[in-house]
Each structure stands twice: as structure tokens, then as C-alpha cells.
Image (tube, rainbow, N blue to C red; front, side):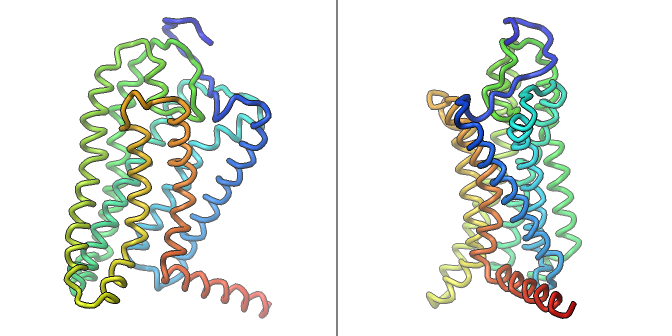
Length: 316
């Protein structure tokens, strides 16, 4: 640990998920399994969307982008645990720490934005189905995707500028398994009031609240349209088309709320690690499972692909 009021930090020490030596092997194997399942599951979704013409629709175009985001965000955060176990080195340079926070931040912002684009897609599909293909054309989908990627990259830049101005840290030991904004801010002995104001304004309003309101409005119209369908079977089938997306939205926002917006009296390092682990590990695994298990199109595409691979092996 570095001395208090140290003006220069060259590196940080990542404590990881647990300090207990007897748990390190279990944690490593669990994280490795989670990482492989996340990469594998999202690669399958990406593979199916690219190869099956039936999935060349706006919804699955955005889902493919979401799979790329999940693979990147898991790699950005969980690789620390794997590297620490393999090399025994739990140090991370100051520059790498800032870069990690930037990429994690913009990937989370991108995920919120892409889920918003997907909610608009569901709105058009259910509330204005006759004009769906005209409204959600390829050009609009590409523009929305580019805007989501660029906005996510830009929105996090002010945080990074303010973090780079912090020169005083009470310690260089980060009680987390990756460099996150909250644990690093806690270590600062500089004035972080501007950063806290930015978190409450841009972070809460622009990054979190506005996308949430847009999703909420979309689903108000969606549910209103569904309730007007006369038959129970028709209502259920229509709702089923957006149930996967709604499940992912609820999971992500619930985790972000408990991780960043809960009262400070409940803000403990253990709970923060738990919600961070769920956000960075569990949700990227759940996304492909939710979209494959709850979606007939994905399951049909998977069956067709497996049959094609099987027939190709027989012919060769």
C-alpha cells in the first residue's frame, strides 16, 4: 500500500473477488467457465445471425451487435482474474486501469443504447406492423447502430478527463476485481465533487434515465396495442415476440440500479463486487440463453445449422 497523500500513482493492486487462498482455484475455474460460456454462447448467436437468412432482420441485427458488446465487456473485466491467477501478478498500470474503465463504461452505455434501439424495433413491429419493413429498413438500422457505438464512446470521455485530473490517492489497492469508477473514486483524496455531479447529471440523466424513458414509452404503446387484441392467444403470441428483450432490459437495469444507484448506507465492497460480477458475467451468459431458449426463430436456425453440419460431415 502506498503512503497516504501520495501525489503520483504508477500502478494499482487489484484485490480480486476474495482474499481467501482456499477459494482462489474455485474462483479461477468458475470465472474461466463463465468466460468460455459467454464467448461461446455469444459467438453461436453471432454465427447463427450471420449464416441464416431468416435472421437477417433488424431485431437480430441489433442482437448481433449486443453479442459483440457482451463478448468485449466480459473480456475487459474478467481477464484480470484469469491473469492474476496464471501470473500471480495483481498489479495493473495506471494507464491500463484508466483504459479499462473507459472501455467498460462505453460498452455499458452501448448496451443501454442498443436495447433502446431494440425496443423501438419492437414498437414498430407490434404497433405499426404494416409499415415495419419500410420504417426499419437496412439504412436506418445501420445509422442507429453507428449512433449507438459513437454515443457510447463519447458519453464516457468526460469521466475519463476528470479521472485523469485526480493525482492524489489514499491507497493504490482497489478492492474490486477490475478498475471501476466507484472503487477508484473512493480511493481518491482529491476533490471529486465535480465527478459526482457529472455522475448525477450525465450518468443518471443522459446515460441511464433517457434510454430508460424511451424504452418505457415504447412498452407503454406495445402493451396498449397488445391489450387491444381480441383473443388471448393473439395477445400471448404478440407479447412473446418482445418477451426476450423485456427480460434482458429488466435484468440489466435491476443490476445497474443496485450497483450504482442504491443508498450509500447499503454500499459495501462485497455487495458492489457481487452486483458487478452479475452484471459483467451472468448477464452476458444469460443474453444468448434468453434469446435462444425463448425465441423460436433462433432455435429453428440452430436446428437447421446443426442438420447442415451433420449432413456436410456425412458427405465428406
